[in-house]
Image 1 (tube, one colour):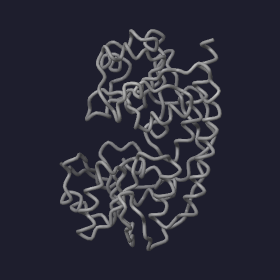
Image 2 (cartoon, one colour):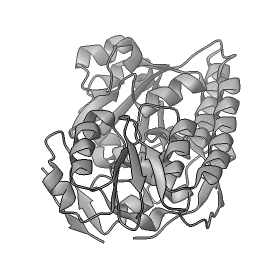
Image 3 (tube, rainbow, N blue to C red):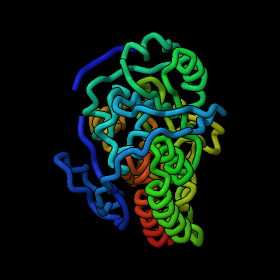
Image 4 (cartoon, one colour):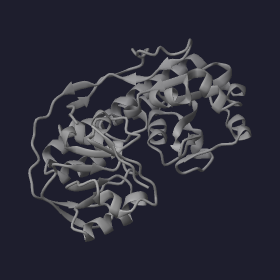
Amino acid sequence: MLTLKRFSPALGLALLAAVFSPLASAQPLPANWQAVAGTPTIKAIKAAPRLPTSAVSDDGATVRVTDVARVIAGGDDVIDIMETLGLGDRVFAAPDSAVTEAGRKAPRHFLFNRTTGAEGVLSLDGTLFLGNSLRRHGKLSETLRATALPAVVVDDLQPAPQKIRKVAAVFGLAAEGETLAKTVQQQLDEAAAIGKPLTKRARVIHVSATGGGGRPTVGGKDTAAAQLIRLAGGINIGDAANTGDYTALSNEGVVAAMPDVVLITRSDLELFGGEAGLWRSYPTLKQTPAGAANRVWVMPDQQLKIVGSQSGTGAIALAQAFKAFAANAK
């Protein structure tokens, strides 16, 4: 199934300096909730794509890319990296659930699922398909290439620096991508250094309104959030449940997980309908240490659910939050 909608711009290079502080927002958080957000330093990149390129897709194909005027982007992670490389205005079609600026403002939007056919993608009239999941886009990309539409997949299940390098290479911006990747890696290393020595590790339940086809779910071990939680010094309860992606957890399972912290993104909180909607969607969450303490942390989507250019900023902020939790738990 693929549905279209209507609307374009870019961003710049968002990086550096993370803080653990209340989030300035039009919608203030409930009492005792915490905003965990890195404060990025924006530095614009004005490099134009250097084409043609021979991009190596994660499904093993080498793809000749000659035109990136209208990119059909498969997910927010590749869009985020395009934005930081100054290519946000090249995003022509994006998922209808996009939270990135370029994704929201793309001229066309679509709903992807596993049954999406090549015909629907081709009808978007793009010049390049840039997928973000071998599971969803591997077979599709093969078919698209057979019709002469260049298609490259940069799989979501890999570290941010590696992903940044691959996306940049598609556009002939290897040097710019390398600089960005190194900066993000330095931030991730800084976050790991904060989190590694913690003796008290917070048990975290990352909840989402969108991870399971619209049903309330818990982030499993293969999610971007799980990577961040582990790196920053926390314990992702979805790892212990051995769930891969976003998966529904029973009421009993929520209680048994005994989370110390509820972690949620700003957009998911809005989709739940705020505080009341969160507790209604997870009725037994109040019976856990996190619920009893009303310990809910809210992060920006691009710093928690997207493995991209803001992963390092988010990781530092989360590590600092875990450090504060450990200090107060003594």
